[in-house]
Image (cartoon, rainbow, N blue to C red; front, side):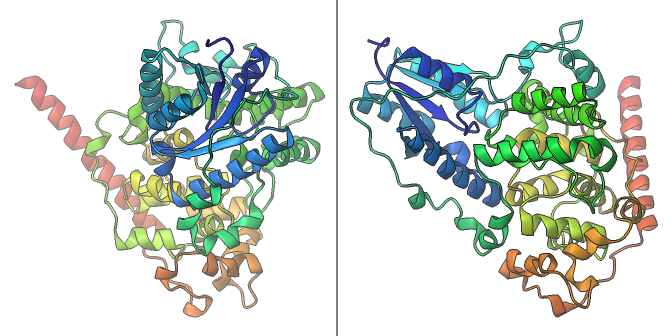
Length: 483
């Protein structure tokens, strides 16, 4: 019966038709295929911006399937309950999906797979979220990599599978199961007035992602290595938004980067290294899942971080008095994204100058970034805080002023996002006051605040805290050894 019964194809962060191994295998089977998206226990926990953006991606993907003559079935509830209900309703003998690697999704998928197999259902996962499966990359000693550079060297010359074309069609079932209406889910409810501001900055769906990649390859990749850190230039690919929802495959980016190398594009290798940085993040999340919630380096759980505070609120509000920090935070509220260099600056300032727990920042941007990624977010915050793998040493503290002078020499980035810096601010800067939470009661006529501290003072305080912590930790180890 399973050889002719429908396949439930469970879509998650893989909202595309091309280069989709599970979809290609389902289409090739000749069996009826029922595409499914679930607002399940993992999706329900997403922050405001990523949940809203995911909903827009689902809407666009449903339209792509409809153009093929098929449907996307929507259900809300725990994943196992929804899938079991669909199996009863359709007689499906298989549930297939693309593998995910962060702990929340792995826990869900492990439970679902075991339960479905116990029912006699063909529960199967496929590659597609990464270039290199975390379980397939190991050191000469058979261990996982803990440093990026050796990881890059290990994978840069590896063969990757050929990209798969989009199927021309899918066999429909005799009877379609009922589907929820996407608008009834209200996935953008928590965005409130911010949705209207952010919406024009989005590039939603597989076709938009492909166009973005083409633009990058045509006009940006040559200067990518030189210009990608410039805050005042649009030098990046912007593809993190599409990659996080699987609207484009990492293989498509890898092949584009390789073509760039063959053409002699100066920025091609840097682009490939950035893509592999994402791979490394998932490699670590898979092998050390505690990285998403706890300090990766042993002992850092005891570092005297501050929790939520009035200072952290000013940081969230983009009102620290440091224009480059505030510009970065405001860019995030208006566009849903933040320049990569700016992410390092705001992270360093929060965790080092302000001595605030990296988890305060991690949780906040998980509410606000439309390109939020569980692995990249966790590793990025711990990298900049000093508690993570491949971390910037704690004594390496970014100076926001010198960074701004170097990467925004004409102050264009800061003026674009901080209205109080101009007598006639641009629309981008004014939009912040419409996008930020109303409860903050912010307006452009409030005046710009003075910095809470001198940068040198903050740096010295951070170094003193680290030295005290290190001394106490060393003393505790010595005392234990002598007992």
